[in-house]
Image 1: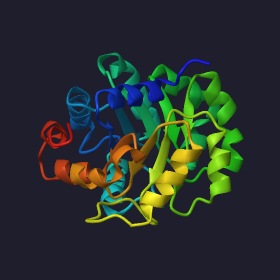
Image 2 (image 1 turned 180 degrees about the vertical axis):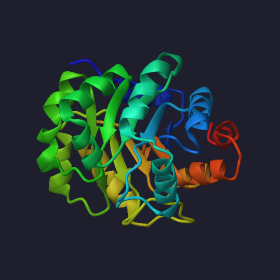
Image 3 (image 1 turned 90 degrees about the vertical axis):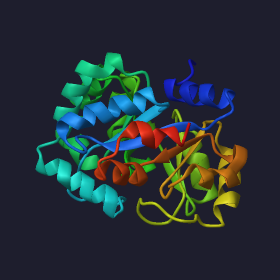
Image 4 (image 1 turned 60 degrees about the horizontal axis):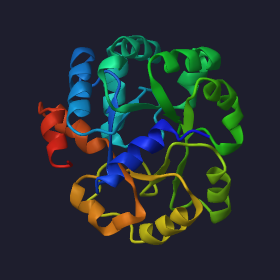
Length: 255
């Protein structure tokens, strides 16, 4: 079996002695035009994988920063079809792998088969779907797999060992480890019990582990050492852009 494009990208970063960088940017944020400029800036300044958020009216896993950005984007007419159509025109100019993070409802409304075809045409390598439990993967998995698109599992502090083992049986380019119990958003500190749970996940998964939710600064990663392979950051980036600053200078401190 060939190695996943997502796995390959993370392992390539690890071989250089660093964590792979996975910035999260809502589609159409800060506005439809500037979104593409900031996406390119992320790509040109160290992003290994870029996670693009699909705006949704009821983002249950998102904290206030991401939720407001999502609502702002919806108000300007951003939708999944807009993103995939525009991304397909620009994908060849981007080096980073692309994953989409979105809730199940917009994906189902788009149509599963059409989603798989259009996402593949736009160069999407994976989907992160917070409200899709493992037991319902088959709603999407056959169509996505046929197009070479993976479902990225979300696990965390409250995921039992037996369930980790079930997720480990599914093909995925990486595992998204949620660092906190709750919604997204920057934290000054992370729960002490993360270390033990990451060690458990490391023993179960052969795939790379990406740590997300609550990550604000590179210094927060020092405590994890080789327990993680990649880091996902979103709220801190969104706040940075909302202040009128650019993705390039945000990425400089992470490289």
